[in-house]
Amino acid sequence: MRNKSELLRIATKVLFSIMFVSLFGFTAEMDSKSTRARMNQAGETSDFSSADVPKYFPLEPGNRWWYSGKAKQSIGPGKTIEKNISIEMRVLEVIKNREAQLFILEGHPSQAVWYLKPEHKNLKKVVIRPERYAYLSVGGKLFEIRGDSVDTVISDLRKNSNLPNLDLDDIAFEFPLFDGQKFGGTKGPDGEVEGYDWQVDRVLSKAQKSLRKMKKYLAFQIIQRALSSYTEIQFEPYSGITKYKYIHHGSVCEVYLDLREHHLK
Image 1 (cartoon, rainbow, N blue to C red):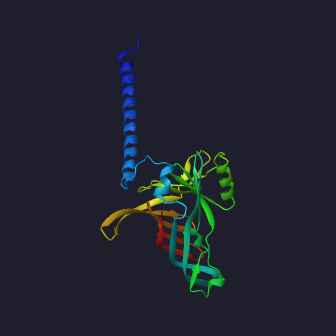
Image 2 (cartoon, helix red, strand yellow):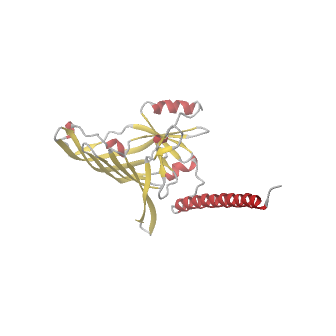
């Protein structure tokens, strides 16, 4: 038979194990509650699906946003130009199947990056020619798709084929947004996320004037810090992207755009 001291040691180990499990569960619950609290500051909940995306980021066909601002860029050794610029963003089409929604757009503030050419030198204003791209909505995540991949995904969705391989670094937004949120990034060999692309850096409270009343609303400042550049996006739920900033740390390339007008259905 085991002596009393051995039984006491076993009982002590069991007690500490129970305390550890309880503490771990309590900490996890507190972390979960903290995350939900940050999400709820924008009036959102964690119960979010693809069906909510076209409202949170109004991506109905025909919706348009007009941006204007300035760009400064190197166009050759010792040569830099600075121009007033503008670009229009609009939703062309939405394709749905049982698993996802694909929003096809043209024009995005980021398309102004490295756009200026020597032939723009004598122009007072440069209108950015919009390029086509798409957002693939899966759950609350928006994956950005560009180039020839857009037509491939369109074909797959119309055939109800499986979704394409999606990478973390393709995530443009993850809704609903909340303070301190991180998304995008890359995975290491073990499958763990090694670094995040985007972070919600600030939550801004603003007042919007109307003829009848003034109402408050939230805007989220989303940033990306890379070795070569800094990107900042201001996003307002139910309105979309309202500001865009890009600064390159090497060769000169700076873009500053503000939303001037939008038409939403």
